[in-house]
Length: 397
Length: 65
Image 1: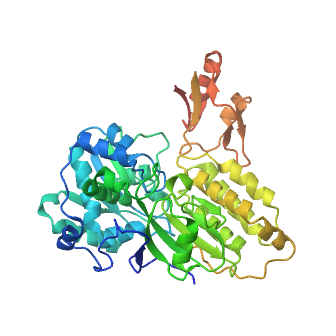
Image 2 (image 1 turned 45 degrees about the vertical axis):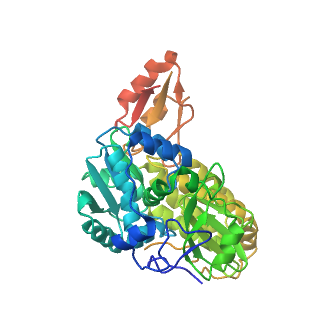
Image 3 (image 1 turned 90 degrees about the horizontal axis):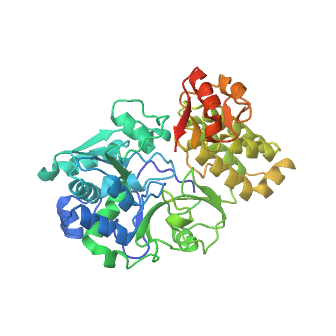
């Protein structure tokens, strides 16, 4: 009923042919022998060939921001540092931990391919989760030729996983976003999400034509989803990009979904339209599909996550530090018949006023929720919905 | 043309900028600046520079585009 995602790898499934998750139906973890038997050896590459491949498959970052990877690689100087961002601080996401824990060699393949293309001096896999970190460490130990890859444990926290905050933390600073604009890539750090590197490792083997066999023309390939909330079968699912939401919800055993949170807690509340295509261009973000059904008080779920988002503020920017708690109070007041205009106002006040996109993301989450839950808000103004808050949307402690 | 920017990690909401540039900067309910217009035409650069220089937290910046 309520999915908690503390145990990555409990369930992985695929709709269509598996790529990133290939072999995981047979192996708990693909060691190097199982990895090469499943995927084959990693072809060698160089910068021009890798850029051509990335252009052909239009690979975008899978951590939420969706930046084109080819553009990132073009802007990266030779001798750069490669960082695999495995912080995965979205509580409703466990796809990156699943990859790191169960298919670590695929992620490492992507990282070392990029490293060879930019003649990187350092490769770091930044991981918060202890189990995932240990799995990557074991995988590196299996391959003497990539012994230079380092695993770094990172602090938890939603904002600490933001690219520039992570970069600062790895360099001995506070794991908080810097106040000035910083172009990580031009400064010699190529940082991307775990799944992005794994997709790249798959693409190097398949080549552009076979990679484009699945998914829409403009956004080919597959994506990893983390399904949670009011579903019978939560877990990580690999789907062709563009798969309709209805197919994914049916496969997960969602009965009578009321709403889905798509992309993560910086994403948006959406109606569970069965024909909604799941793709980066439709807000798939980091792949979170969290389902809320009729058994829980949806407004209470919104209030709970908003309070969590406020608590996740790094507290260094005034509008976020004061504005998000105000926003959380506004949303909580709706449960007792409060006026939604207050929350709408504070969402607008915080939007775009911070060193990172945390306030903007929180504003988007709340605004989209308010838009979708208008009838709930009215019901609470008339005395309440009579349903408990079940915590279908996971939040971390 | 230049643009006015705030380093939010430095800003403490003293409000000096809003009193020096009332047409450009308002304050929210906690006292933090709200930029009402960020592009700064060359004719106003001198006034804006003065506000930038007087920011006690060194949080206000004028960036050349």
